[in-house]
Image 1 (cartoon, rainbow, N blue to C red):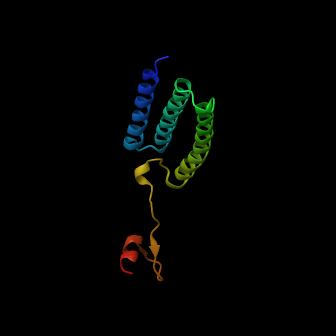
Image 2 (tube, rainbow, N blue to C red):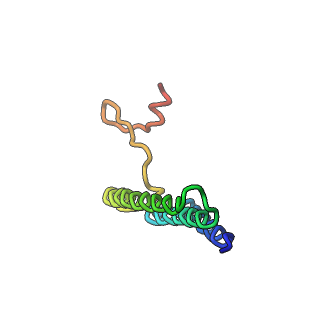
Image 3 (cartoon, helix red, strand yellow):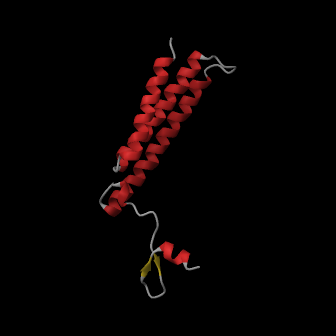
Length: 120
């Protein structure tokens, strides 16, 4: 088997996944793009295992299995976060996710976290 075709396919899949992560605003589509990148890595691992026999037999396939388990755990946690985000904000747009909580003063007013850290 010529290893060029799977490597090029994996590179295209990985590039498509990176493009999806950088350009998408929907959190579910971002998770799907991450899965696409993980599948590209699996393709590279299995191709490298079948073309270059290492000291350990089938090591690329074992690593691919670990990546599949990691991907399943990532999807479980990621979808739980997306569902909680939808319940709280009624949207799954990544741009609308606040990265910091506003700090509250003693009288109950909200101030930006960056302002309170800059004044120290």
